[in-house]
Length: 244
Length: 248
Image (cartoon, rainbow over all chains, first blue to last red; front, side, top):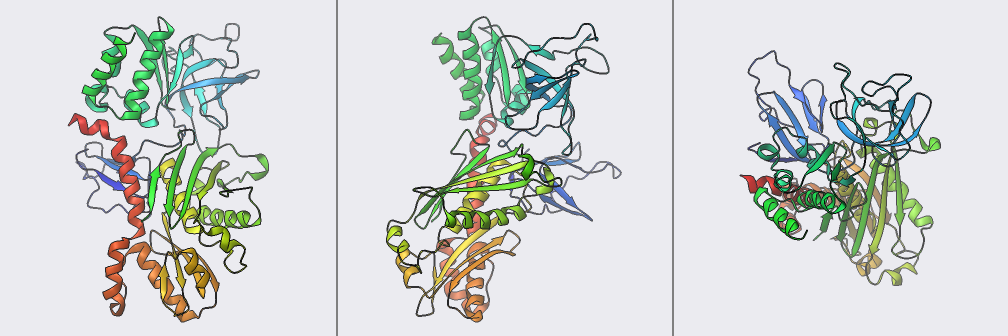
């Protein structure tokens, strides 16, 4: 991520910037925002920063804005809209087609014992399949292990909206080093809370009281909108904690 | 010089403002969203353009402008990337040139062309900020030919009134002509001249040698329109990447 190249739609990516694979048989991976026109033209279709990972032989365009489009394996926060005999129909983003969550796609769910979700309840789910020609499908357990792994209905708490880029940063394994996020760790030293981050730009926060929940949510939203660095996040948290 | 902002509206998926030559336009893009069954296209995204005038409700003029913008955007957006969805672009004209009302009473000057470049530029900026996949970007230029047969770039209302012909040309980022709308009396040769000049404004490509002297001087202070898009995007990315700069 040393070089910052900004691309606009329609710009051809010159072959000099493409990563050089360590193994010639390794195929180049094109991430979001790039289009391959045979035989060997690569053009960008989004405006953003061009990111290159030499080790993985991957190239993609990163940007922060826009509407979330479901991709397989993304963890998301969805709202149950209504249920039918076998499915819960869930809203991932407003005004898009509803995603389908099978009523049996929960940990330990059988035909006799299945979770009862009313319309309006919030679920933390994984996108099982999403293609442009079909409605997305969600699951609330890991199909290989049968365990919930933190997914399922989220009770209580509050949902806060953040930008898509912020959600991606929060979901990184090493938040502080790679994503530059220290705000959650800073708050956790003083306040106990639970948090679930959805790739669709939603963060669910639950804490002891409304005040604490709002503090965490505000800290996240302000970090996002102001683009705060690690030190500034520390200052922000101190300021918010003083106000409690 | 054009004035742009990206994402001024936080409720829309993407938005932009664009002001130039007395016109100021706010564009908001929502999409891809669910489409009404009757507008649904099985293989591609439906593009919907809604235009609101600065005052009053839209009429025939607005419908015409909508259709021009809609047909342009349909070719710029990669509609096949989001089949059976809707990409909605709402354009609101915020201000027009001050003496606009005076000219509207005259049949010749009541043209819809002067606002079109601002509409096209605002909508493309809003699409960029929405991260909708586009096959290219576009830039639009507005040129008038006055009675002395000289070209006037971004003419004022008075100049439009006195002009013998006015032309709107939009170019894709590859330099292809996307939109051309002309009004008034002109010859093919004159149009070719207008086309060359507009292309130069949009792309800053080297014109032919005979003109390069005065044109290159002009294009310096105008700066090519493509850079306006790039500048706006760069500013937005710098804002978004602020956290990253403070780390390293």
